[in-house]
Length: 133
Image (cartoon, rainbow, N blue to C red):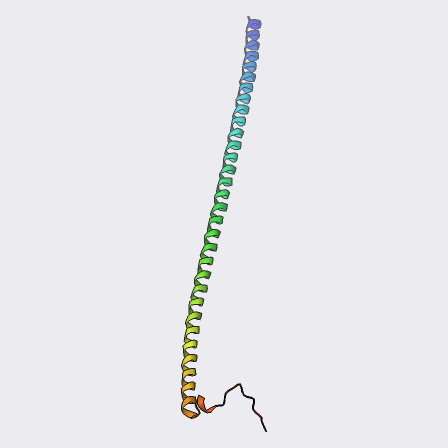
């Protein structure tokens, strides 16, 4: 009887050990599958993050290009505006100086006419040779 019980106990212990071993193996397999799944998830998340960063970087490059274009166009427009204003002011200045010169010339001519009593008829013709002696 003792022997039977001892065999049963031994068998039960053996079965318990086998079951524990199987449970342990199953747990390890489950853990490995879980770890692999987590690794795949992490890798997928990292790839998505990299793609997201690449898209953001691309958008920033495009935006930077647009901003540079706009700044260049604005600078060109401002330069043209300044050049046109300069040309307009130069024109005004030339016109003012021309009018002033014409006024001065007219005054000088009027003064010379008044100062000299010589008329064109009093002067000898230019085609004659004059002897300086």
